[in-house]
Structure formats: C-alpha cells, structure tokens
Length: 475
Image 1 (cartoon, one colour):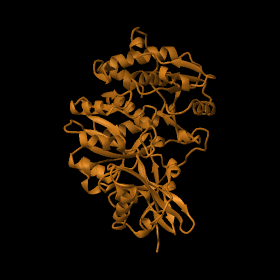
Image 2 (cartoon, rainbow, N blue to C red):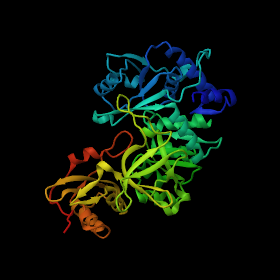
Image 3 (tube, one colour):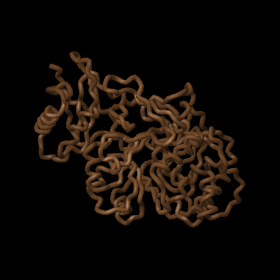
Image 4 (spheres, one colour):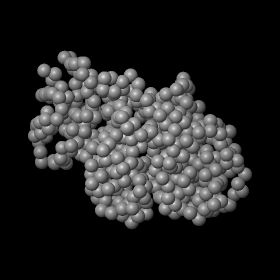
C-alpha cells in the first residue's frame, strides 16, 4: 500500500498531492525522513502533532520503514501520554515543536522538521515499498480521555480493503481534492490520507479549523470533497452559496434530521456514513440525494462488509454487528475477535437492506420496563426552530429505574429558561409518548465537546439541573 505514493511519483509526479506539494515532492520528503528513521531499533514509535503536511510526511516515512505508529491525541496531558506509551512499550516519540511539552521526559524525542527543510537534499531510495496485509500500519487508542483506553491495530489489509471499497462507493475523478479538517490522529483523518494516495488524487490539510477559510475553499472550487462531523456542517450549511462539491462524507455522531433536510434543500451532496476506528472508519454509507426516501438511514454496507442485527426485539431492533475485511482482528494485548465485531450500537435493517442507528447500547434508557432511545427524543427536539444542539442521557430514578434528562442550547437568548422548558415539553408531548418526556431539562450556552466535535455525553451529568422535575411519567 505504500506503493501508492511511489506509483504516483512514477506516473504523475507533477500532480498535486498534499496542499501545494506534488507527488514528486511528497515522495522525496518521505524517502528523506525514512532514511533518518530506519536506524531506530524500535518496532513501535509514537507521533504527536497537529495536522500538517510535515506530520503526514513523517507518518508515511515511519510506515515505510515498518514502524507501528501510535497516533497520539494532541488533547491528552503529559501524564496520559506517558500512560499510553508505557502500556504499549514505546520509548521514541516524534513530535511537533508545539507539542514538545506534552511528551514525557523519560522517552527519546525527535522533533519534526519542516517539509521545506526535508526537501532541500536529495536522498537515494533504498526502500522496499511493499507491505504485508497482516502488518500493523498504525495504532489508535479509543476512549483515551477516560484513561480506560483500548489500542486498535490498523493493519494494511484493513486499509487496502477500505480504500478499494470506498472508491467503489464514492467514485473518483482526477480533479478530486479532499479537504482534511478532522485530525490526522483520528481514523477519519488518516482514512482521507490513505484514500487520496490510493486514488492518486489531491488533499488539502488544514492545520487548524478556520470556517472562513473552509468557505473560501468551497466557494472558489479548490476542493470538491470533504469529511465533516455534523456540528461543523451545521455551521457551514447556511453560509454555502455556491460550490463544486462532489462528496461531503458526514458522520462521527448522530446526524440531526433538520440538518439533512437543509442539505437536501440546497442539493449538497452529503453521504451519511457509519464506522469506527475498529473498522478503519467508513463501513456503511448512503448518498442522501439518491435515497430521499431513506433519510433517517445511514445506508448500506460497503462492498465486502456485512451488517448483522443480533438479538432483535419484536420490532427488529437489536445489536449491530459488523463483519468483513475492514474489521480489526482484536485490540492489542486483549483477546482476539473471532467472527463478528459487536459495535455496541442498537439499530435495525429495513427490507431494502438499509441500516438505521438508534443509539449506543450504553445510552439506552430503560424506564419502567420501557426502552427509550435518546436519539428519538433528540430528533424531536432538533425539529424545533432555534435549537442549536441537544443531547439526552439516562438518569437514575427511584420509581422508574431510569428517566431521560435533556440538555440543550438555543439560538434565542431573549427567552427565559422557563419559557424554553415549557415550549420544549409541549413540543415533545405532541409528538412522543408521555414516558419519553424528559424529567429534567437543563439549558446550557453550549454542550461539552471533544476535539473531534462530538458531544461528551459522559460529562453531561455534572451539569444536570434537577430542580422542579417534570415529565418522564408512565401514568
């Protein structure tokens, strides 16, 4: 798979690869850095850096010399990073200058040099660019901010299966230029790098998110593909006046229906996608504009992937399991996975094979024996005018076991919290069963989010307003 870059150097050396740099440039830079890294005795190394062309070059160079590269979340503290390095027996860290202070003093460090410095000297290519499907290309830790992380080995076989299937579903043109605003240390960012190299097309890496710059890229036609989380697209959509976009890959968290409707009205080419680190990102995808009668679905599995619903209830809702060549073989230092991968998500597949996600199993609320899916309440609230964001979590209740608690932020700052709460309860009561009305409603300026823009549900309970509870009744 590293051959994709060398192939680009041989067959289209002057084509744009990353930002203003060509395939010849990136190839030369990777060979230069690989020459330096090949002397490292380590099997595994780590890298901590914000998005940059330089980070991409060092990552590819480390992969070229057969290093298993742990991509560290830049939002972690030095202590958290030290814990991850220790558990994976890593003693060498590549880092950008900005992130030096987060690297423990107990390890060997190598600071990333600017790509322009790296390109200054020509270095002979002495490397074997072929890789084995079973070799680990990268390692990503999930749930890293909780301390109870699991290490996902991303193997070349998974990556190859993914990029081939993704190209089949999303298509390819020589004019493609994929905007990367999501972090390269996240699978959504890494998959953009790998897809673009496989396709022989361009990508544009942003070092930090800048909405004005993104809008300029969209309006001047510089980019025609991008991967976003719903929060980012929700802010961008009203400001997009014209575009040449071919694909907007949208996922990472639940996608509010009003956002989908707004994109359809503007004919924005959103592709809803469902995947995770363990499946190397996108594993189920739906081009929305081609499936207007399936707007609540996330689509069908990519070629080679299979979705199973395990232990379904009377309505066909059960655990979502995935199988196929993109699925990992197991977490590092844990038991291997044989057969299907349990996503811990709940959902169902309709008669046409389209998958619908209802909730994480851990987010499911069981109230008085009734199953309540937070997403159903959230979708209802999002349908109201002026709702910026919302989330529902379970809260323990002496009578019902659990009840729903709603957290939301609104656009209209002139309304009192009491007025907002009355309006929300009235709206939900006209749409959902009485027991689904949140017992607690907390109004916030903004919901807490992580570095990927996902709402951090686990931290919401600390903001809970339990005064004057109302709702959540089964009577």
